[in-house]
Amino acid sequence: MDSGYLISFEGGEGTGKSTQIDLLSRRLKEAGCEVVVTKEPGGTRIGEKIRKILLEIDNKNMDSFTELLLYTADRAQDLAENIKPALKKGKIVLTDRYIDSNIVYQGYGRKIDRRKIRKLNNWIAAEYWPDLTILLDIEVEKGLKRARNLSNKEDRLEAEIIDFHRRIRRGYQELAQKENRIIKFDADKTIEELHSDIWRKVNEQLTVDRNDK
Image (cartoon, rainbow, N blue to C red; front, side, top):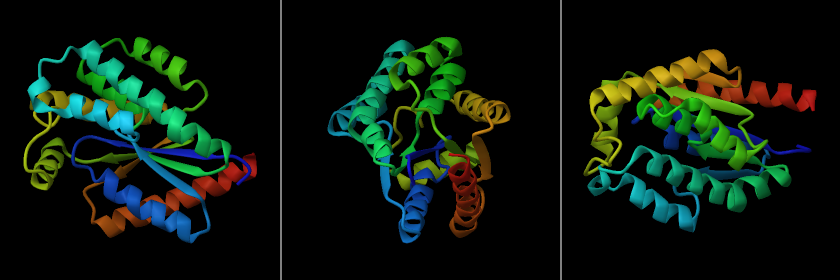
């Protein structure tokens, strides 16, 4: 590749993003690609400290704007340390959550003006928006059950009321209808079936985009 490629994974709680990122990363490396994997929040040492603040259930009284700014602070550090250097070297970057999470969780979920969220992220990320976004979609109740089964205790977001999570799912679905880069996948499949679907689409999209560059 003569330039990098940024793939973000998005979805509500319990959609299996981490598992699918790991499988895709291995598949891409087997195909000879250089891959960097990161996550938001927490893809850097500083980001891990921000993640702890954001997800600690004792911080349930956190102001919505504080939450938004902490997420974007984490992103600024992730861009500086991981994403920008990798893309400049022509690598493929896989990130577990990115800008769309802000738009959906703080925009649809917290009801902050989505235009302000986009403006803030345009300032932080500039041209570093995803080339492709993999959206994993599942019924809210199933996703939350999965997430809670994988953890000994709920984090601050998992503990939100069900209507909050329903707004998240609706937000992602609306974004997918507006943004051509977002491809929605049914996350209620087996791990293997879902990986096969994702790999087929990513391989196809990389081929198309390489030919266009």
